[in-house]
Length: 313
Length: 249
Ligand SMILES: Cc1cc2nc3c(=O)[nH]c(=O)nc-3n(C[C@H](O)[C@H](O)[C@H](O)COP(=O)(O)OP(=O)(O)OC[C@H]3O[C@@H](n4cnc5c(N)ncnc54)[C@H](O)[C@@H]3O)c2cc1C
Image 1: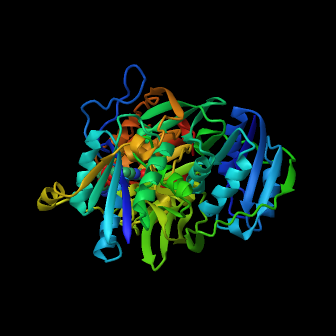
Image 2: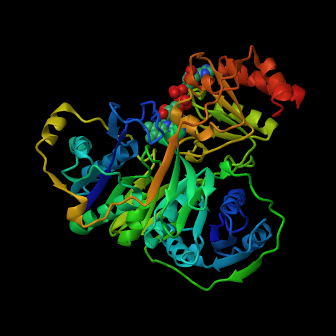
Image 3: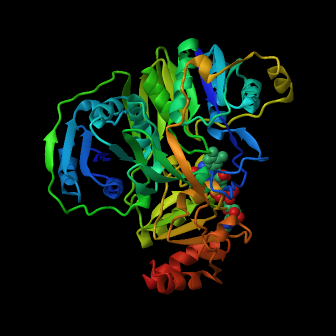
């Protein structure tokens, strides 16, 4: 067996999620090559070469891949992937965008968002917002798979020294072009991999009030997330949405503030180690999954939390 | 410009999903079914394009059992002009759905195809991208804004880091995210009118597509249940528990 892992990165550093995808690849077993496709992404290739379990790093460095356009990546990965039994990418917005194109071009099914490996053909994945867990077996010769990073412990980042090979294949489909990007700037940890997350919901009432959560987050070294309702209402941007159709998080500690606990929200944080809920409605469904529930008005509880944390941290 | 919208009949998003005791799947007997929420957003976007004079005709297509005609009628009531029903009682997986839609696209030749980014049953997030690859079209996935300008469409996409705008040559595929629009409700007169709008039926065999599934479902289980914990009295107790019991801060 031979596995091609697509490296997720921003042209300067390798995303932590890739280390989790490598862990999934190791569970499948076989030689693991990593593809670094991007523009001026040499530094990423060097990082990928050090990750545990990597046999070879393939680098496709060209302007056509600079913004990770799905049309171009789809063609590149479909061509390279033909030689592999498995093609893996993280189930983030990049992988979700181009991987189905790879599968379609290879005329195989895609297995989305796997959270477990049974054997080389059989995988475990959530369906119905995680209300059911399916075990599926692929009959295809090439398995195209996106991996839920939170379900696999990352491999060591500094463990190996794989060879690096530059590819000269340039796939520019000429169908799409990049216009602009508005990326969230934050000094806080990345939501998807933070070990503590504090999220606010509709109960926060407005974007200004999220500052209260940010202050607590900064004491804890936490990332700040949100429910769909808070994003829809314009309190905070879309990249903060946790849930079935937003980001999947599984931190050591998840604090839900003014969030009712709809199944779509639970789908994104239900695998957190410890869940805290702060809600003024004692009947709120979030309490059914919370390890520690506090029935309180958040506008009193959050300032108190900040004070108490200052005492103990 | 002609717009094609694909809609899927799925379990209503409010229904509590139950796994069948024999672990063969999810129990769909007697549960409320509805149009997939992301497909509602797709229909709404097409209708808005028509109201702006950008779209001239909206064709809505659904793949599924006879009952999927209900969702096509809903789309017609919301403003689509005619429907195509690809009727089958078999399970249709994403690749096969994309192949069926490709056959419809080849017949209809739309300038824009709008689909939901994922259906809330399989949670696959694949069909739009697969359709785009099979038809050689560009794709604007997870769209929060769609602006047609001449022979191009600018799509703002909800990505992990924030927002990203791409420019696509038409014809193109767009998949919807939650912030694209807020779907309207169908009015009673429009529901009545929709009953008279044309709805053509076809089948996978008519379209020449083999829909045998590639993925076999070995079993479906309920997720490990999380035990409800305790209620704390106040913030001080909460912080004490987090520090000394759970040891997470
Ligand atoms: C297709 C689809 C996809 C979806 N995807 C997602 C997703 O990815 N993520 C997601 O989160 N949701 C998602 N949803 C939406 C989900 O169904 C819920 O509507 C949403 O999660 C509700 O957000 P909320 O808990 O913030 O708001 P509400 O349900 O309105 O809850 C607000 C809570 O705040 C509490 N509260 C109010 N004021 C205070 C106060 N002063 N102090 C303390 N507590 C207070 C209330 O008691 C209440 O429990 C999706 C829905 C659909 C249909």
